[in-house]
Length: 384
Image (cartoon, rainbow, N blue to C red; front, side):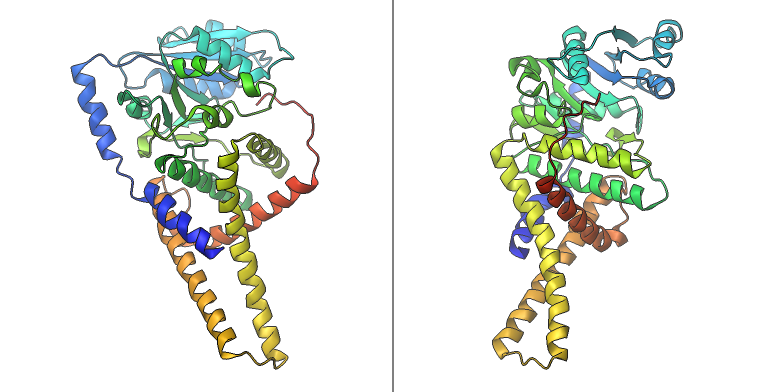
């Protein structure tokens, strides 16, 4: 188990830890003066998000980029969003909206809204986010489209950290969000991209329509980001953005029931990943959990046996010591490499808490896996 973990840490996670973003940014900067910037459509799907839209839209409208639009998809809102969009955004030159007044059984509401949006956008590149998000800077748009200056690239994966709040739940949310980013960035750099986060994701509309959009999972709740990317992303057509200016900060869930519902949906979506991706993620998660479980089991068993005057043979002592050394090497490497990634990703988790994060995530993944095995899928439909 430790050996599998070391392979991931040394040969996968390290790619993100030491990735050089500057070369990509220089390529984007040099391209802009010499040729017209490709137009970009920022798409925001919203339902009953009036207060968030009041804050977000001015931040999107003032992005520093030559040619873009902001398209808001208002999906049957009842909180005054429609009136706000019709009467109060005239001063926002880049913003327009489409109102959706129906729900269809053959496709989940958000995927329908996004499909309509991609048919109606003005430009061939879309940048997706949610109403409860806030860009880190007015250079967010430019930075997120930088990977697509390479003509081979059709997808740009961004980072969307959660705001810091007091309490253990917020800490767990930030831990899990960081570690998910470590995985999808690192595997993308290793040539095996498997997901993106719809709060901060860009791709070409031609890629969407060439692969029939969300058709293969149109009735699956969620997956408008990760299932689509899982289907169409390759090592050649996918780039990443680690620049702090490209982060899209999000508001975290503030109570356990809402967060559990969100994670349940994410786990359900993971069942539809490609077989190869599920094997890679299963090895990663399983080895992480078992590394800690077996270490704790042996750590408790050895003192008990010593108390009972069990006599260890020289070979048994050697194996125990080798196991302890291997575990400590793995712990220190995780601490150093994932800590460096956290530093690059806006200090999402302080480096001193890495060992704590390590064991908490092992416990979380173990419990989530057990719950998935023994819980029947619910057929409840949610907007997101």
